[in-house]
Amino acid sequence: MQYTVIEETSVFLQTKQRGNMWWLNLQAHPSAKVQVGKKTIAVTATPADAEERARLWSLVTSRYPDFADYQRRTTREIPVVILTPAV
Image: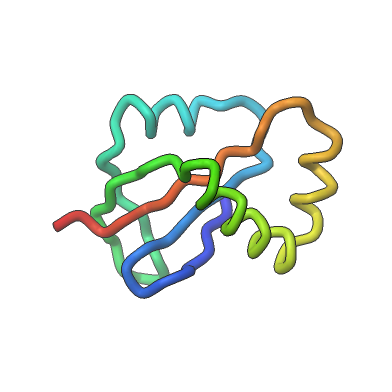
């Protein structure tokens, strides 16, 4: 999985992984922990709504053009998930 820090308070992730178990797990259990460098952070996962996904997807594909290529070759929408540090 790949993650990108967009804002100080949020991270979003996307993946080209086959299968969707990671996504099903986050939907069922949105509380998770991620490791950023040496730091482990408790987060809450939220799927990006259509507007936010469009904005973030534009950032993803400008940084990682392979994601745009992969999206064109698949019929599924690649999930974009926002990870917000738990309070």
